[in-house]
Image (cartoon, rainbow, N blue to C red; front, side, top):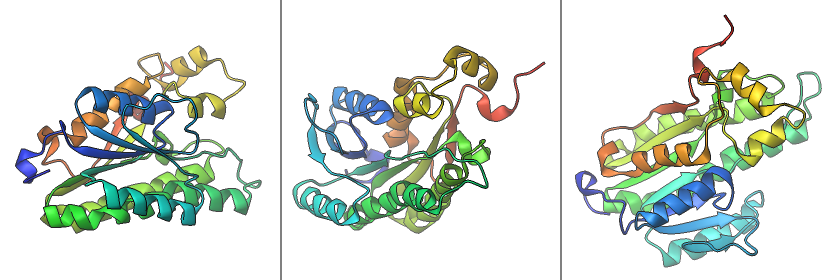
Length: 247
């Protein structure tokens, strides 16, 4: 990438964590179709026809993560980072296990910091770049989600701080906050729920969102047209952040 006003997605190199499932997979396919060089990191890489460069890594292992990041940094001029990987553990207050709290913060927050730090210096030298962090509607409060809501709230703090730190270098940093999206992570969080009923109760638009819709928003934030947007948390939730749909 060159000067901020000239950033083009085509031919740029975008790193995506959690690139083989859900939102990460939808974004991978969209960016590849747009002519990007996609570098993906995922825990499971077997039998995946990945349209780019895929690296197997358990991102919950900080040492293994650092080794893989070093390989990528030595090989690719990463123009943008999408911190997509995350985990959610549902436990009511009073039963929150500290191990679950640590695990959730580690994968959601430590990983985002570690991955971003691996590439931010080269972005600063080029005076351009994009960083997108995935957070969640849960930051507004969600039942039995102390660990997850707290970790994603920390991601918002990172986003706003990094935006201030990096603005002078032409690097934008934004967060995307999905609501009820039809992904494996969301479905597994409510195994006993009727998803159509859930959608009607949680989302004014009366349906679950799709991973492709979230990917479209991220792709826009990576583009030249989003060059003056930074430090923002952009919801994509069908109106779910507006409150109850009950009449």
